[in-house]
Image 1 (cartoon, helix red, strand yellow):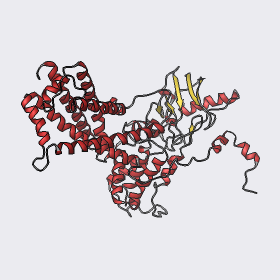
Image 2 (spheres, each protein chain N blue to C red):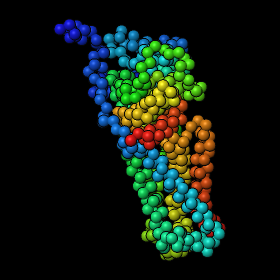
Image 3 (cartoon, helix red, strand yellow):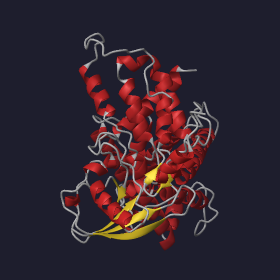
Amino acid sequence: MALAPSKDTATAKGSASTRDASPARPPSRTPSRGFWSSTIGKKTVMAVSGLIMLAYLVAHVAGNLKVFFGPEEFNGYAHWLRVMGAPVLHHEWGLWIARIALLAAVGAHAVSAYQLSRRDIRARPTRYARKRKGSSYATRTMRWGGIILGLFIVWHILDLTTGTVHPGGFEEGKPYQNVIDTFSTWYGNTIYIVAMLAVGLHVRHGFWSAAQTLGVGNARRERVLRLLANGLALVLTAGFIAVPVGVMTGVVN
Amino acid sequence: MKLNLRVWRQRNSGAEGAMATYEVDGISPDMSFLEMLDTLNEELILRGEDPVAFDHDCREGICGACSLVINGDAHGPERTTTCQLHMRSFRDGDTVDVEPWRASAFPVVKDLVVDRTAFDRIIQAGGYVTAPTGAAPEAHATPVPKAAADSAFEHAECIGCGACVAACPNGSAMLFTSAKVNHLNVLPQGAPERETRVLDMVAQMDAEGFGGCTLTGECATACPKGIPLPSIAAMNKEWLRARRKVK
């Protein structure tokens, strides 16, 4: 047959034969246009759930800062959270709606982060001999920062919502005293401040990334988005840390 | 100039690889990085050893064939392709690490050569226009806004070398795919397939086993053609728009 390669040409290929030995590798899976099967779809879920949590954090820090106006105002605010939406909503319904929405956001954020991270690690199994650090600290700590924040949330709820691991006598409806109890321990301050620094770093890269994922980012808006991300990170971290610092310095007592 | 080269040697895709050390002498600062490797290979051939396999073609920075990670940087320390990187960027006596692109979607074929056909399949999935174009049409037959023409040209500069994937800690091909999607999606000629193009190319990109984008920006820093990072946001926008339009 004229088309069949002769033995001579096959050997003449020499070193090129190794390339012929590995034919074009077929894709590892069938392409899908589905939303959840796409990396962009998963990132969209991450972005939206992250923004929901971010909006909550802004409200949370504003509420926390009421601690500087004394126990009456702070405890009164905590009480209002339970009657929020009344008389349309029954007692604590508003609070539970917010809790369920947040739980869904945390779940969606964690599941998409886990699936994307597994995929990313599989996609780059080999490291380079010489490692360069091209990206910012906030960018490189997104995964570990997220895990730290997840663990912090568990402790934080057990400490100040359920009172399970609260130091001293936990009293429901007396958050002012509970806050002082927690921030009177060295470990309470340490855990909290480390977690709040992690929040700042996470928001710094996360907010800007969410804007890119949702297609809002472009060259013209770059400066504004970076400023917003850094500003949010700074306000949240400083605002949250102000409370333990206030307790430690005796401003809140 | 004299260099200590540590080069990734791997017999074939199935074999284990390792870094091998070579001393290369008599390097002129005017040589390109590939010419320096040619010098090494000539020596290896004279010694009866297997020369180092590496990809190259035009050697003028426009084809996208060359592909080395030099000291941890895709295409080395300058913002250009490896073939346009000159030895004057290194100092006499330097130790230089030379590795292939690292990504599971780009398996090593031999030494520094990787299989980049995954990129071809992404292009096949939608990186084209379906209108028969024939010979070059009269330039003003289809009016293109200046801003769109500039944007298309900026993205059309992508040579598909894969440096973005190599530099990305997630082995993501988002910058490449976004360059190809945006190039055609901003033009009227690419409008008929605007939605299917982005959906199909992203679907193929994911199917090839590339990682997701975490917006580290390493890709845009490594890109020898300066494809900007906001291209990825522009593709995300196109993808979300297409998801809404296509049922």
